[in-house]
Image (spheres, rainbow, N blue to C red):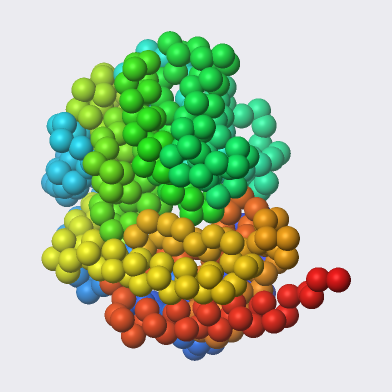
Length: 437
Ligand SMILES: Cc1ncc(COP(=O)(O)O)c(C=O)c1O
């Protein structure tokens, strides 16, 4: 078995619609590293797109999963209430943002979690309108892709899309069209949102605002605290809910359990998945008890959702994050990355913006004009990093952002290794960049 032989079989068997960024076939993962079928080792700063936050094959997760599989695989929560489902719901309720009592519902993926937040919000409010944002990514199922902002490759061709979805501008301060900074930019985005609701939707028609506190696929764009506070207040004022999509930013990635914890804000509903169960399919909706219990029994359900193995993995993952102090570690890793790449930015005009929250850092690259997105240089850096033994991913509506999703459990030596490799790849890509005429 080699990368090449697997790629050939894939060509003949897998739809070309399912693409892979890196032409490698991973066969083993341990801690911060993965190995491909050719035996090459990579430092993994993709962690499966924010899934293996605590690193690959953590012994406590492996042990919990093996024990669970051997003992009991599946009966379905709709048939009988296995304890690990209840335990995950208890843990999620305990760590969910904000002080009010919470309830949880378990599913299989981020998209499914988002879909269910919409169902819950509509029943709880008796309204239909969902306000999503530009630069959003909420998944690929039909409702989720309708809520997603980016046309190509997520939405184009999949019309008709779901009704009663409205789109407001995400507070992408670096590219704000008002030429404003800081609070003024946040206020301008809020004013535009309120104007859209008043003039286009109607304040009494909005069931919920759905927002990623750090837009992931959109380019690792943190929403300013002032905008989030304003959104919370506005939703309260018009009787709408705030759905917080923490599928990518949650479970400790930003140095707190949830990105909104940085601002002590309480959304009505939170969608989580990805890192929740360290690679086992598990998603969840956790929200205010009054909202979650607005539905009648059996209005929500899922055959596999909250299956015992995924729940065992989730419980072990949460234990590891708590027992090993990984929220603090994520903050430290984020601060080190921030400092290193801000200092690179000061001497590199093509590195237009360094931003993020905790260990969720984006590097936005621009063309010679200092503003236009430059996806080509990002592609070069991503490929060169792989050649040098570091896996990273591009992101962003314009494809011109490098997203750093390092394991939040990695050592200082691994952190230095990754930063040194990335800096070398950036320097090489800039040397190759076409010289302006
Ligand atoms: C913010 C956000 N929401 C939802 C999703 C969809 O999750 P899944 O791929 O598990 O359906 C993703 C996936 O990248 C995401 O980043």
